[in-house]
Length: 165
Ligand code: FES
Image (cartoon, rainbow, N blue to C red; front, side, top):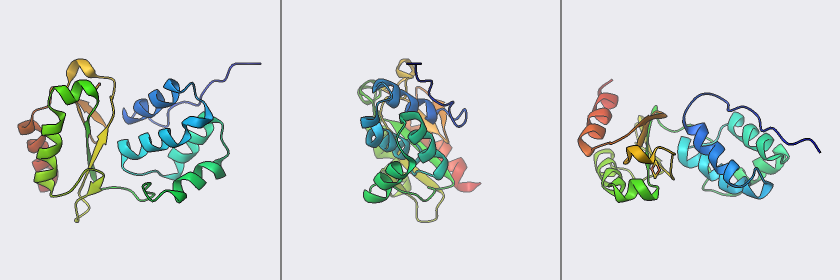
């Protein structure tokens, strides 16, 4: 049987690499469906039609099955998150290097828990597992752009820029 070639990533947004890594780790097996959808949700804050299609095609599951999972679990969000998204990597290396402090700082500044969006719809705060840039820990993704060696001060400065735009 010809070996399966997974579809290309939907865009060069770095967050797709995280999604891809989850599927690859599971050998693109169908049982990775929920875990992969979780990864999309935690990286992007929601799942749109393109994302669901991409995951379904990559894992060779019927689109209806992927939609079935997304609509069954309340955890999944089909609506776009805030205008900006800060995603803090909470993988082991980043955690050791202070990711928990970054998360606490962002929660305090934005007044929201992780997985949520500020009431004005400006900023969503997400948490990801290892984003594959451990040598630069602690890492955040600011609107999908990897930024390493992040400090609370730098992150707050970026949040400030977003909220005064
Ligand atoms: S643990 Fe954060 S990039 Fe690997």
